[in-house]
Amino acid sequence: GVVMLANERLAQKDREAMRAIMRSVAECHGLTDADLYVRDRRKHIVTARHEAWAKCREAGFTLQVIAGLAGWDHTSVLQGVCNFAKRG
Picture 1 (cartoon, rainbow, N blue to C red):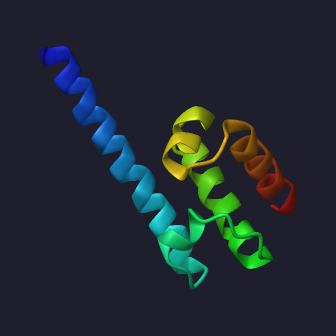
Picture 2 (cartoon, helix red, strand yellow):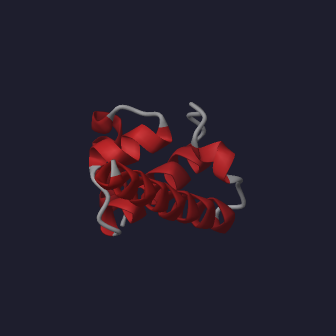
């Protein structure tokens, strides 16, 4: 019903906010946001991906939500966020 529609709208708003973060980080690294979603292990892409995930966490998104949008397992996202913090 109405509650489900409200949740769907909120979820869409969250997805748009996360995509904006991913796009912004990608642009700062000279990449496209699509580069952050592929399973590419080149260092410059991994670094950008981890930064994007960390910024999504800072924005309040859970590991599960980030993983769902990014197409990775939540434990991979956790590791990436931790790796980014270590580089800090």
